Structures are given as structure tokens and as C-alpha cells.
Length: 230
Length: 301
Image 1 (cartoon, rainbow over the protein chains, first blue to last red):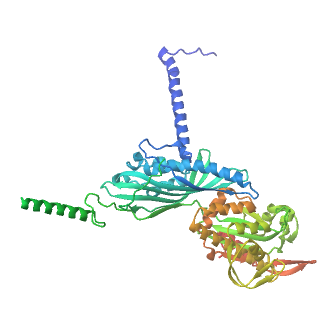
Image 2: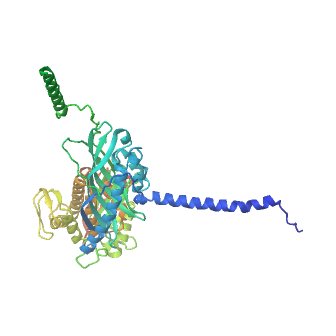
Image 3: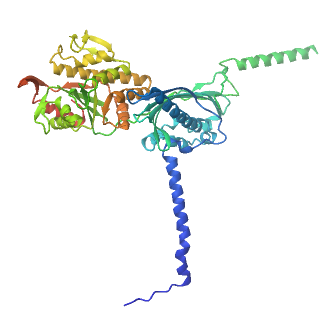
């Protein structure tokens, strides 16, 4: 028994064809969102840059050391690998400290979501969020300060190089100082110092551990902070 | 006129004094109230091992000479290191190298020969078969590896329990706390001729060396956590292991929480005997209780 093909009213017949562009657009948007989330969350900072109102700042790299993970390593080659890794880490920490301490669009709002992208997903990022008081200018910075300017920053990097000559892990020791002016006009020196433990992921260097202290000091009347800005 | 001048001078003096007082250090500033400084605070996240499951590592010292494959010579030093991540605690269980034990697929022989017969895989299998403890990872070093490692970390401080003067190993130590370089540490680990119990006493001394290294690591880490990479580099250059790097880092972060003074360093008890012309150690039947004790949580209680 053959069933004659049903004929649909013209409007109904067109409806599925109309949905295709919508479906395609939806799928495209989903892919874009997924890609954005992937690059934002995969660690290594994901290319996040501070806003245009952020004062210039760069750590002064005061030391780089390559630690060979294999005996009879070519010390020169290890040093070159460490130097390259240190440059990348330098860039990552410059951006992170600008976002964490100097970007007014972050500290005035007391929100530092783009800082946590520099940490590994999972435990490291969630712990970093819990340690926001220490790792950033702080959630209440906007109601405390009227201005924050970098004072100085030093960075030293040690890089573990594996038997294949690849950098696999690094420690970055930092001392960062900024002059913060309170809403009432008084000032203080914001001091952040410690170590970041980093490893290299697809998206670049990412922080998987840290041991960082904040030790802010009152600003002395005679102090004239000289910028390490660049 | 004079009165006006006097008033003006008084006003000027008062203003200058006021200004001076206002700028005197320590005086409360009216225009710029002090910021309330937060007390110094720290944040630390060092991803150590977690969970309740203990981790067992088999630490082996090969007697390979330069040029020999350290994975195919006898293991002169054999220790299970049990780590309890939840309790930040550990225990060390040493095996006399001449322990006469079943070697899976190869009859009964000295435990040291398992590695020359079947490498670390057979040694792990032998230990697992003997103790019922699942070994998660192994690491092997050589004489030179131990010496280099100790030198790389700046030496270790050891409390030598009794006089050691042995020409075979080169040990020449008086009792007491002393700092060893790599060569001295190796001699301390190898001496079995003038230590009580011979092979058993030597195994206990090897455990002491592991604990000395742990103490040194904690001390260094406390001063500067960056040393973790130096220590890892020293290890990677001088051991062969199946420990992946991320696990090695987790172990290092776990180790910095373990108090070496609370780590039990036990050698499996046994008695000397002979099999044919070979001198061996027969392990006591009480050792089984030791194994099951350690298996439970990684610790010897």
C-alpha cells in the first residue's frame, strides 16, 4: 500500500528552512562562547590585558637561573632556555600585577576576576579567589584609596629544564611596592612579596601554587617613590 | 598704626607657629587622616598530596659501579617510604639486603638479587608479594648519584649514633651531630662492618640519611620555598624513577609539612643465617604484623 505524499500548507513548509540560519547562528555563537571560555579559563592569563587607565609598570628582572633535570646537561643551553622562560614569566607577572594592584577599573570596583585566569583551573584558582585580600589590592580598595602608583618591583626566576631541554616548572620570586593614596590624602606603601610556582600549559605559564605575603607600611613623609615603570 | 603692625606680626607669628606645629612629625594631620593599615598577612597554596589514601614509594640504592646499568645491578639499599597525606606524616621501613625471600618466578633468594634478575619491576613485585603493600612509585639511585645529590643540596646534618671506623666504606666518624658532604654520606650509608647488626644496622643508618635529607629540605624550604626546584633538579639528575613530575612536586610540598622527628625509621627484624655458602637474613615472622600495620595508613604505629 502506498501512501500519497502529504502536502503541507506553504507557510508550514517554509518554517524549517527559516530555522536553519537561526540554528547555524546559535551553533556559531556557542562555539565562540566555548572558545572564549576555553582561552579565558585555561590558565596562563589567556591574554588578558589591563585597562588603558592603568599606570605603566614592569618588574625589574634581577636574576634567572636554569636548573637542569638531567646530569651532563649543556649549561649554556639550559641558561638560554631559562632566559626565554623568564621573559615569558616576566610578561605574565607584569600583566597580573597590573591587574591585581594597579588597574583602577579592577581595584575601584573591588573585582579581580581577570586576575584569577593566571592561576590553574581548579584548586589553585579557587584558593586564589579565597586569598583575594593578599593577592590583590583588596576588595575594599575602592573605598580606601583614591590613587595607586607603582613604586618598584623586582623579579627573579628559577626554571627547571627537563631532559628534553624543555622548561617544565618555575619559581618566580617577587617584591612589588606601590604608593597608595588614601581617600583622606594619607599614603601607604603597598608591599607584596613571595613566590609563585608556575608550570607551562598550552596557553603559557600558569600559577599552580604560591606563598605570598602582604606587608603594607605607612608612607614616610620624606619618601619619594621612584617609579620602576616602563 | 603700631597696633595694627603688632597685630599683623602676632597673626603672622601665630600662623607660622601653627604651620610649624601642623607639620611637626607625629602631630595628627587634619587634612590627611591616617590610613588604617591592615596587619601583615600571608596566603599560601602549595598543592600537596591529598586524600586519605597513603602513598608508598620504594627507594632503592643500586650497587652499580660507574658504567654499569643501575637498573640491572643489585639493590644494596631497600626502603619503603609510606606517606600519609592527611596526617602530614610518614614512616620508613628498611629491608636488609640479604633478606632471604621469595622472588616471584625465581624461587627464593636474597632480596637484593631481584633487581639484577628483573630490574625495578621485579623488585617492586617482590616487595609487594612479601608485604602485601602496593608500591605506587619507585626511585633508584647509585653510589655516585647519592654523593652528587647530597653535594647538590649543600650536605646533610646527621646525628651519628656510635663510632664508625670502617676502611671498606671509608666511614670514619665519631658519635654526634655532624654535617656530611656527599662522600661522607655515602660512606655512612655503606658501612656495615662496624655497625650493630651489620646489614640491619646499615639499613637503619640509610633511613637516618633519608630523615636527615628531609630535615634539610624543610629547613631550606622554610627559608625560601623556591628551593623546591633546586631539590627536584638534584633528584632528577641522580635518580631513575617512574614518579611523574607533577607527583614529584606534590610529594615535595607534602614533605615540607612532615616533621622528620616524628617519622619512624624501622628495619624489618631478622636473624643471620646461611643458605649453602651464602650468608643471608631470615626475616622474623613478626614482620608480617609490621607490614599490615604500615599498609593500613602508611605509618608504623
